Image (tube, rainbow over the protein chains, first blue to last red):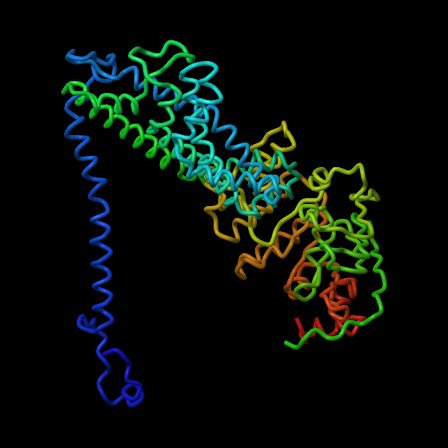
Length: 297
Length: 275
């Protein structure tokens, strides 16, 4: 029954039309087919994701113990060992990247969203930030190599700077978007209460946008933690724990890159375990982003 | 609803109220860019009274209201000719800080706009802004009581201001505005987003507030003006110059405006012949 029979409705003496679902009707069949298609494709799309996580847990889980998390990397035919120095190195360099990119990014976003959203400078900066989000990460490494490594050598600081270059556009764009979401009626209210522009930004815009800003920050941090290409040119690697910021520093991603190509089972097992740790770090930051990103009021 | 009748060329006689004038507003021209939004509007705001602004859409009544505490400054293309004097001081004077003006002349907006903070913090916002040192809890409670919302929120002051209903949010915004004890309260169609019961509550509140504050009220609702306003200013729209320019048609004691209007246009508007 694809059309309602108006004559039937008009002469009420006949039976009412059936309102039951008709599965064999062309419209319903098309709808059922398309629903099944999207289900199938969604399931296919998640196969790579779940197989990677499955492999990491099976292969890396076995070696993930206290020793692996704290010990130094083993030499050629050595047994045991771990990647403690790489874990610390990754956290330090992501920390440096965050310390540089988060304040700069948020302040830039304040300008883009509140102070001069339509100025030439803002339009240019926004365009550049959008372009940079698709920037090949190895170029961030080459850039930092040119400005820091040539003069000062490989270092954790250079690694952190290259990660900051990658994090900055994400932080700027997410923070700008979050601040734009603050309703104008709220800023109007603040001006109406006698707030200066600085007070409007500090007391209303930033607190209201904070969950969105934190989400962007956490995503930037999670992305930076997994980067390897920029660190190849800037932090290189080290077999020891970091003792100062101006020396070559180990990182999980480079350790995975090095160990996975080695002909020793021990190193390959550690590479799997390090990969699992890296995924867990990214996971933790994503969960934090979701928790902190929940609006308080 | 008929179209707006052709504007009458003559300008209304200037209304001079019997009591003290808190804000002497005389706008001969208000522009947004090249667009002449309002002309020839002299609207004195009398102390301790509710001055109602009525008129059809686009007649500039909100524009005039917003120029009384320099909220129009937030629109970069706004400029005007004339003067707005608060207790004799030109609020657009070179040395005047608009931020200070707005602390004396508070505002309640058309859409309820609490901050995304707790109910308590919303009311305390202005007090903290002014570095209030006294008993914050007491001041917050008093503001909420005067805004006739204390009983409904006293057990949930920590809850979000946005969790309240529209009418409660608007009363919260009124509490927020009066917590800092401003001198004048500007209300820009405060009931237009509310249901009739909430509207009634806000109207009763306005009548109580005028005991301590001077109120200027923009309303689209003529019945509301007759219920609460002591003085009413009727604005019209002049479409003879091509654009839509608002201007003051007539201002007077509310009863006179509704029962014995002097201008033909006012007579037609209050009779409901156009809106």
